[in-house]
Amino acid sequence: MRNRNPAARRGRWPFARDSIGLWPIALGWLVLVAATGPAADWPRFLGPTGDGKSPERGIRTTWPETGPPVVWHRPIGTSYGIGSVAAGRYFHFDRHGDQARLSCLDARTGDLLWKFEYPTDYEDLVGYNNGPRCSPVIDEGMVYIYGAEGMLHCVRADDGQLVWKVDTAKRFGVVQNYFGVGSTPVVEGDLLIVMVGGSPPESQGAGRFDLGRVTSNGTAVVAFDKRTGAVKYAVGQELASYATPQLASIDGRRWCFVFARGGLLGLDPVQGTIDFHYPWRSRLRDSVNASTPIVVGNEVFISEAYGPGSTLLRVRPGGYEVVWRDPPGRDKAMMLHWNTPIYHEGYLYGSSGRHASEAELRCIEWKTGKVMWSQPGLLRASLLYVDGHLVCLSENGVLRLIRASEKAYVPVAEAVIREQPGGPELIRPPAWAAPILANGLLYIRGDDRVVCLELIPQGKNGAE
Image (tube, rainbow, N blue to C red):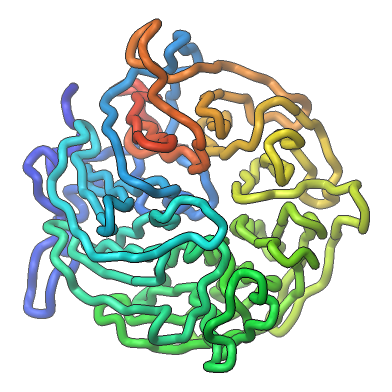
């Protein structure tokens, strides 16, 4: 199959070296844009706009029983996260033995271009796998990875050479949480913003069953110079969660919303000043916050699956007001475990429920939390929005295409992914990472394999 990206075919990154390092050259970037046309890269967790939505169009809505055509697939190491795509390359972060590995692959063939490794001894406290949870972040010719043990690395995207690294656990006194580090960093201008959640000396040595006595040392959020790794600020009396920070512009001002272990922090991402803290966490000892905040206009939605459920806030400099919140008891609008919901035309779509047996795919009204419809039987699932549809990957590996409609659950296509009828299933459970889409290609992963599918036929790509 012909590669749409000439830069990827030549094996080059569309940046060039100057006197201060590897920085973008305007002409090279324009060439890249021209080469990819109206298609889009997926350079970070939740995509180019940080909300799980793709601007591409022209998807296949009729699938054979084996799903969209398989372009390539390959085994992967131990991990939970999905990769990221930029400039014709797919970047995947996993673990092989005692080495954490960032692999750079040709996005259209799956061929290995280079790899970067570092030693890790991370062991999960509650028996989940010991690999990375975060997605690579690609920005201006650099790739940032954040390991389960707290190692933060910056490497060059063209060849994987190390630029800088920080052991956040050692430097900031991070006490290992239940599932290690699982919050992917975000880039704001010259800053790399990271949920760290360090603790003072008296909290060190706490085990799983006494994490309740662990306190913060004011490093809930740490901003690093993205080029050097120097610390620019550290703020917030909170511990870390597994939700990725969300950046947004509201009334001409930049915001960063961090759904930390104990609640939501609203802050200025450039200055590092905190506007508010909104408590939102279950009283259960082992509860976690893991779903990334969704921002629409001047309103922010957060949700969890262990107790309080969902709430919508209207924010302003210095504070917030509650638009609605789930009531006490079992009647909740939505209870998101790890998946981040999709906002579309006044409604939210997400997988509600802590356990597979109780999970429902739901649509709720943004302004009120009213449940428009619920569809049980899909297990826990993760979503991607593209071209008026939701691509839904259930944790058992079943891939579905669903119309994004608030009126009813409208299934369009469904498949168990195989290369050919009767062949082996390519996605083995647990499939807990949301699908990603870049330049017409859909990437999904299960327990031990990543699969690339052609969701948009070549030449049919368009952007919204």
